[in-house]
Amino acid sequence: MTYVIAEPARTALPVSGEDGLFPVHRIYCVGRNYADHAVEMGHDPDKEPPFFFQKNPDNLLPAGEDFPYPTKTEDVHHEIELVVALAKGGQDIAVDQALEHVYGYAVGLDMTRRDLQAEAKKLGRPWEVGKAFEQSAPCGPIVPAAHIGHPAAGAIWLKINGETRQQGDLDQLLWKVPEAISYLSGLFALQPGDLIFTGTPAGVGPVQRGDQLHGHIDGIGDLEVRVV
Ligand code: MN
Image 1: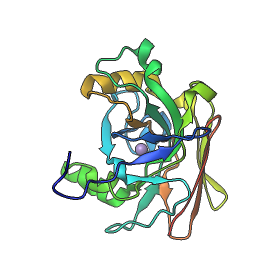
Image 2 (image 1 turned 120 degrees about the vertical axis):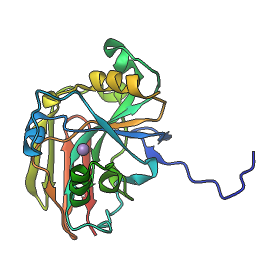
Image 3 (image 1 turned 90 degrees about the vertical axis):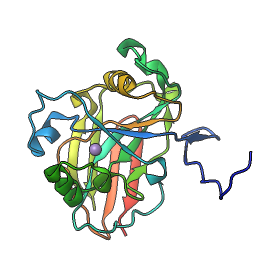
């Protein structure tokens, strides 16, 4: 096969404890998946079915690289999130079989141009400008479930310059990982290489140039990112 233009590069993430890379297909994100974050964004967590948006695979920012403060915004927010990496795809996946599709987990950040997202919400427009911009998805290495199992509880937090800004526990997820996979697979044909950012606990807020972000999830690891 030859292409008529230069072939776009495939995005891939390193895998903890393995030599190979994890090739990324799509990035799905779950909205408002912790009750305390739904409340801080002005919503009733008891009334909402899960909803999803996407980022582009090449929006990923691998660990060790700086996050460049993006264009056209003055209010970039951090959202620390558990990331699920799929080894197998499927449609209409049953909740009790969903974890069989998981390759591993990572610590990720759903960086958000909150001002542009808020304007899009107000005008009933899509969220892409707020969510799917360059380097908007910092993500640590994929940690295989074969090594750590499937964490359903454990601390998830984010510090900025050593000060805690977000703190929660994976057991506070409104839609648990198997439920999110199952629900998503009814909407989209999931594929090997898909990532799912599973939502953020309360405490989201702005970042500034020069900030050092330190995210952590018990049992998975740490992600450190500098805003430049
Ligand atoms: Mn998010």
